Structures are given as C-alpha cells and as structure tokens.
Amino acid sequence: MRDSDLATYERWDMTAPVVPPRSRFFNLSPAGFGTSMVECMTSYVSRLAQAHSVTPGVLHHREVMKYGPARRNMFGCGIKARSRSFTCGINATGGVAADFVSAIGKMTARNDLQYLTMLPWKPLFPSPLLMRGVAAWCPVCLTSWEQADKPVYVPLLWTLEVVKFCPFHRRALRLTCPHCGLPQPLLGQCSWVGFCTRCKRWLGSDSGNDDADHFSVLRQETPDWEIWVANQIAGLIEAGFHNPPLLTEAQLSQLTRVGTDLEGMSGFARILGVSVASVGHWRMGNRHPMLPVYLRLARVFDVTLVSLLTGKVSPTQIDSLNLAGVPHWRNLWARQRSGFDRLKTAHQMDLALKESPPRSLKAFQNGHGYHYATLHKHFPERCRAIQERFQEYTAAVIRERHANKIAEFRQIAYQLHEQGVNLVVNRVLTRMSVPKSLAHRMARELLAEIKREILANGRPPAKPCSKMAKQSTSPDALRAQTE
Image (cartoon, rainbow, N blue to C red; front, side, top):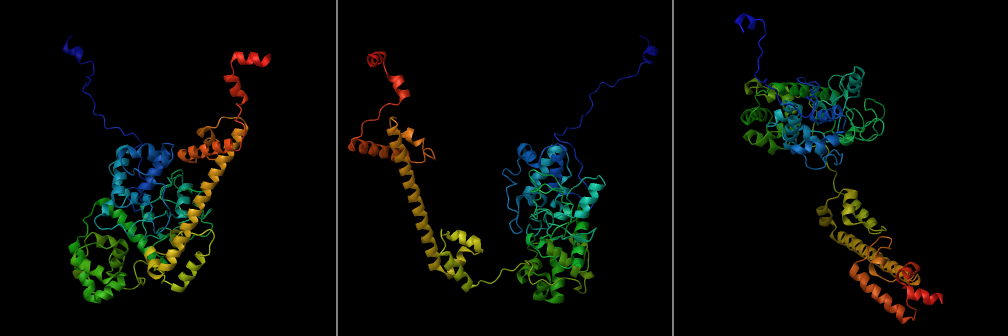
C-alpha cells in the first residue's frame, strides 16, 4: 500500500488509557465545602447512606466497619449533656475522627474529608468542651434549604459546644424535637438528616418549648455574646481550608504574660474563668487552653479568633484589655455542684431503710446523685445497714425462688406418676414453666426422693401410658388379652 493511501485513514493510538481508581461508593460532594457552613462528618455519613438508599446503621455495620473504625455499636449511647456520646467524636480532633475520615475517604475516593471535622485545628484544641453531646440545628436554615430544594445537612458550626446561636438568622439553636421534645444524636441509626430519630417527624418546625439548657454543658450567655462567638467560629472553620500556620506554645506564653502583667495572675484568671494554675501553665508554655478560653482571650485582646489562633497577634499590639461585653464567669465549668446537705441525705437514707422492696446502695446513689465515697465518709453505719438489708432481701428472694422450683418439680413428678408416665429427670425438667431451671444434679436427687416417697406410701407402680403400652406389648400378650 502506498503512503498516499495511508494518509486517507486516521491514525489510532493503541496505548491503554490511564483509568483513575474507582470508588465503591458515590463521590458525594460535601455541602457548603470551602465555606463556614461546611457540613460535618456525621451529616456526610448520613447523606451518603441516603444516596445509596440505606440507613446510616446499615452503612456503618456493613461497610464502614470493614475499614476498621468504631468496632462497637456507636449508636448505643446515652444522650446526655455531660456524658459525651460516641458519635460526637466523629466530628472532633481525636482518633475516632481520623479513622472515619480515612474509612469514608477510601469508600468515596475523597481526600479532603478532614475539613468536615476539627482535625485541621487538632494541635490547638483539647477535647473537653469542644464538641456537643447532642445535635443542634437552626429550624429556619433547615426549612429554607428544604423549600429551595437544596441538600438538608448539619454544618460543622452547629456541632461545637460554644455555638448557641445561628449567625445568619441571629436566633438560638434548637436541641430538642419540636414534636416529641426529645434530644437528637448527632448520627441516627435509622433516620436521615432533618428528621427526628424517635418520632421520625420534620425538625424544621419551631413549635413547642426547647429545653436547651438541660442538654448543654456551657450555659447560654447574652445574645450579643453568642452571636459574636458564632461569627468567630464560622470564620475559624472557613480559615481551616487554607491550612494556616497555628499558634505555638511560645506565642501563647508571650500573650499570656501580657495579660498577667496588665491584670495580675489572679485577675487575669478570674476574667477568663479558669484557675491561676492554668494561667501559670500557659505562661510556661506547657499546654493549650480550651476553645471557650481562646474565645475570651480574643475578646479581651480585641482581636479576631482566627488572628489569635494563626499567630498573627503580636504582644506589642496589646496595651490594654477590652472587658466590654465579656460575660462574667465564676468558673469555666458553669454548672456548679450544689453543696452537700447532711440532714437531707440522712433523711433520704432513713426513708430508704423503710422501703419495700429495699433498694441497693448503688441504686440509692444513682437515684439521688451521690458519690460512693461521700456516703461512706459521712454515713458509714447507714450505708452498712442499707447493704445488709438488701443482701438479706436478695437471699430471701433466691431461697423463695428455689423453693418454688422444687415445689413445681415435685408437683410435675406426681402428676406424671398419676398419668402412668415413667419418671425420668429430663422428662420432668422440660415440663417446668422455665424448662431445666433446676440444676440437673439436684433434680436427680429430688426425683430419687420422690420415688422413695411413692414406694413408702404404698402407691402402685405407675402404669405405662396407652402410647407406650402399644409400643411395648408383644403379639402373645395381645392374644392372651383377647382370650
């Protein structure tokens, strides 16, 4: 073939194309990515399950656990303010968040899911008072997204404990369902984002009372302070996408020295709501404060939170502290424990000694919120009396239950004898209300005693039942009976 003929045909490139790696699940884009309203990891997991028409529980148990994170029932957690739920760690800075970022990233072929958590700020934030134990949401945001046919999701902003208000609608976040009044976990096992995990109804409604204080560790301050905090955290989340340099312990030490030089150690500690020892640790560069303290530092230094945490604030810029609008905290842990009332506790323990049936000491402690060491320190005799009374009651219940089992066994054995059934241990045990609830050795001894009683009373031996007689009777015996 001539070259002119070859020129009339197109040339084909026969080299194999480079095929990018495929993901097992959809490469779902996180809502609000790159903005202050980026969704959190728990919301992303829920939307990923919804995109595949399965529940989050099924997605976790069937797929996520193959990659290693959370090899336990993460949905079986109590929803309380002070007991941190397991699911809140998915959006935090610890190993749980890192494991979920890795696992979901492998499933979806995404390498940017760390921005759906607080992992970019991990070196700065200790875990206490960082994440909520329950879900929070703005009903107006949910309703507006649903009406505009946009994805309904939970922003990372709403999952932080310090955020109490929506910065866009300037209203408090809800923490309980408007229909059933119950709090919500951050990730529901059988429900999707925007719907109650209990009653399955829409959370965008703002009807009904909201007992938000009961499910928050930090109390809610004035609206001006809460809106300022929400805007500062929103700016912080948005700045995390640019991987800025973080505040070092040496820089924090210098800033702390400026504050203590202006107000003194105790005065500066009182402004921040922490102990003098904590301020001393920061001065020495030993540790980092918690997120609520960073917010108060930014406010008194009159700088933004992002500038403070990215090391852009120089000690030379601070010549005075701005205390205007800073709420007064007696202590950072806002909910103080009430004092111990000896008379009240003694009266409660005396009533417990008269209860019927009696409670255990542990049940009494949990019911009234006392610590074991506190009760034993102040009322050792009453504690001993409650324990002994409960032990006696427990022993009596066990004896009565055992006697009832023996009585039932004897009754069944005599009934079988009257019916002409041969007495065998397992035959009696299987007919009990709770089959085989009596120990086999004890049942064998008891049945031998019953047989001796039957012989001693002169009762005739048990006749075989009709079914057994038909099986054991020989043809000669049948012929003799007929004659």
